[in-house]
Length: 138
Length: 209
Image (cartoon, rainbow over all chains, first blue to last red):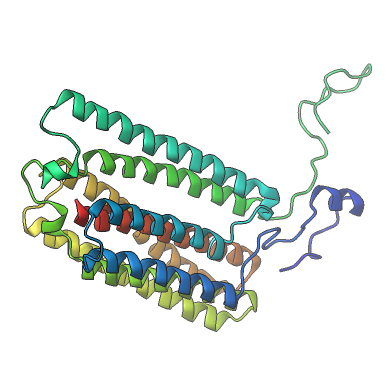
């Protein structure tokens, strides 16, 4: 946590201009507090327990609705982890972590939706009788 | 300043910064490590895509409902979730420069990670014992690659954690060690994020197939 240990090799104004948050550890990177960690933990316990309960208890008869609900819970929990545990925000590292994350999410969405869409149609068009429809696999 | 090619008579041509501006030590380590995690995220995205495509191809072999033990998955998920908060406590202790308690929380995190890894290995052993091997069906190939890659990450995380605890014990919470603990923190929480995807897509949605 030393900000003054660095040898001042340059004039101070130039350094201050180039690095608005000088320091060895945690420049521009927030760390969270005990409260934020506990909040994140409580939220993730809830967001884990509900989908497990929905599946193990057969709460909703329609599997399609259950699937969509647990996917929504999964996305919500990933957001909780990114905010409370990975301390994602628009300011850390001058916004570059957020930019990298957004870029990654775009590529992930293209890869996942593209693969599933293409392969679903490949299966339905090339192999009649062997569709990806869960009802036919039971 | 940028490279100058046009120079006055007799002046040496500079193709690089003669007078580089100073960066603080580890100034860009966190961003670099974040970029590594994002590339790791793409690996997992492709593995999830493979599982999404192949997950229904059982080849008349066992299906998720035949193989998966959801209470066991719930226990391993709990272990990983708990390890996230204990790592958070280690980070908070480190910020207050308390070496002993930092090491204690890191050790608890490592034990919880080992519990998770043990349960995954037990599940793999159990499945292989029942003949549900990776070469049995497309579903099992995709399952073992995806869950196995995550387990491999947890394994390296534990090795890294033990290495770091030795380094902290020998050198204390020096700035270099602090940045290492922070990087492992990001790695550890990132693995938890991936596990959310795994238990949702592989285990819970697998049981609904």
